[in-house]
Image (cartoon, rainbow, N blue to C red; front, side, top):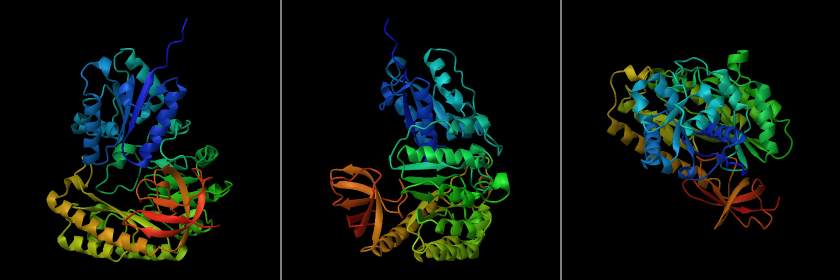
Amino acid sequence: MSRPSALRFGLVSLGCPKNTVDSEGILGHMALAGFRFVADPLRADVCIVNTCGFLDEARREAAEVLRELAGRNNRRSRPLLVAVGCLVERAGGAPDLASFLDQADARVGFADYLRLPDICRELIEGRPDPSRAARGFARRALPRGYFAFLDRPRMRIGSAASAYLKLGEGCSNNCSYCSIPLIRGTRTSRPLKAVLTEARQLVEAGARELNLIAQDTTAYGLDRAGRSQLPRLLRELYKLPGPLWFRILYAHPRHLTTEILDTMAADDRVCPYLDLPLQHISDRMLKAMGRGYGRRRVERQLAGIREALPGAALRTTFIVGHPGETESDFRELLEFVREGHFDHMGVFVWSPEPGTVSEQMKHRVAFQTAEERRDRLMQEQARVSARRLRARRGLATTVLLEHKEADGWHGRTPWQAPEVDGDTRLENAGTRARTGDFVPAVITGTRAYDVRARRTEA
């Protein structure tokens, strides 16, 4: 008797690096349960769509993906669709958003991630939808089952040389505009042992760069020990052998301390790079956003970063159009960007997120005005970024090789984070070059965001 073929599953991953980690966990979990992954979702028996629900733009993208996959009305010619991720949780606490998931055959919340293979199998067999609708966390902690899911083996996607290392979930900063506590719950740090175990596994599997992520990376362990445990974690990571890069993303300014900066400076494998989401610089707007700091503190921190990590690259994000933002507030922000502190920057237009404090605020900014402010800010930063990159021409650096294309090898320097900061094309990489190699190089040319470099002798 021939053995029945494995059920086929596809996966579409949307959103940020934190979603990427979940998607890799889903891939590994489904494969261990006997499902066979197929790259084309339309050839699958079931397709899992890992959604993002943080902003309206992300919700619309998820809805469009689901509509496209559901475009074939005959179920025999299209996969069953299972929605997971942030939008599922968001809709659980804000029913008005549920329509974005209308095309999904089932919705699975974080609490049921460990049951995902069984849910998919039962759905394929034609049983009634076995998933339980997510309820939304309303600032409660994520269920333990989700963290057990995080400890499962991951099937990596993207660069083989670079991996994200998730330190925890949720956030307790309660910024007025932010729905993360409503989606991912309050701050819950993973145990140190679990993080270190995963870090070793990733390195043993070939990762040469570990990007530390959480909703607030600098607050890692605050919920467990009353103070940030990021310095302790870094010191333990430094015990990993061999050439490696460590990179810290999503460092909330409220929790960035001198101890963290000094610990970063203690090992030259830490990339001189910080992602410091400021969101604004006007004291009035920072207070309205509930950020817990003002301009003077930001300026002191920028000086501290320059002292501890000379030449460090900085990334930040800003929000324009938050209720109450005046033209004067925006001009202050625009002038701050012109000062040239940042190598990389992203700008979001505020959107009214159900259940947040900002949603109830008066004096909203017209959407067109907010978009114009975003464009002006990005144009100014493009000039700053180009100028800062030009200043690196002729400098010696190291390039982490990631993939080879028709025009040669591409990778990143220490001051380029994966996916968001452009890449570096390396000339004369050599016939023995491999993904994951660290190559000494000199910068030979720059554009607005991308770089050219030439291999040098070590």
